[in-house]
Image (cartoon, rainbow, N blue to C red; front, top):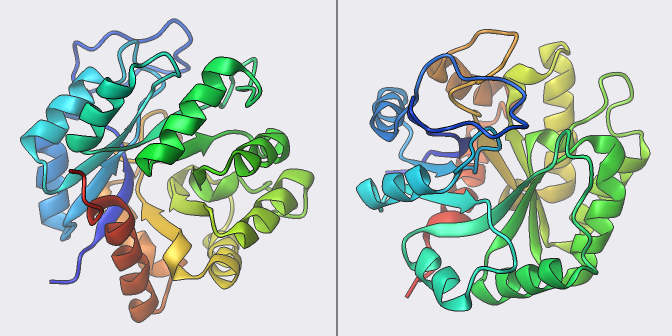
Amino acid sequence: MTPLVDAHVHVFTADLPLTGRAWTKPETAFGVEELIAQMDAAGVTHAVISAMSLLADPNTYTLEALAAHPDRLRATLDLDGRVPRAELERLRRVGVVGVRWQLRRAPVLPDPADPDVRALLRAVADLGWHIEINVEQDRLAGLLAGLCASGVDVVVDHFGDPDRTHGYATEGGQALLRALDTGRVRVKLSAAHRFRVPPAVLAAHAARLLRLAGPERLFLGTDAPFVGTAQPTTYAAEIARFAELVPDAAVRAAVSAAAHAYYFEEDRG
């Protein structure tokens, strides 16, 4: 069976406390069993849970989800450089594949020269993990430069936040396109429902990234359960949208196969 990987989802329960800087409040819970049910209905075989910035504790329930479905789920967590190496190794064994930096609206970006950040980046590289980043495009260039210089793998969320008017013809957009040449940067075609542009514009962004990165370094993601979106959608609709973004079925299969290899096929020891 050809895998179909949703590389960007969130899970949470109604009783999980929100952080003080939460920019919205989920209207309903979206537990792991609901995720699995929707995956099954849409023919999705695997998914990657992204650490959710709204939650005061973004990791505990995610780890419970990994334990419940170890063959179908992987996750990135919200971690810092003070986590002991033995704990990081344990997290790797249970299905954690990276660290997510959710930096949209963050007043200060991580500084790769900071000792704690340096320690985290070294650990990420040693573990074969990646740093997943979600940040506004106008702050992307400097962040990418520091991460690429550190030698870690980077996965950029949500198309790299292309400008609504200028697309990738901005400092941050050009930095992203150049970073693809390093071979260590990947991009998620995720959260398509959040972009208030015509579908053809988003498809053109996807095509450009595909030309530069190839199917091996692009991932498809829904951003389920679509918290805080102004454009209501469904899981099935977002899975169907993959065909709009990448019309060639063979290329979509190659994208999903690459995601499966990257997130699920490495020996975790």
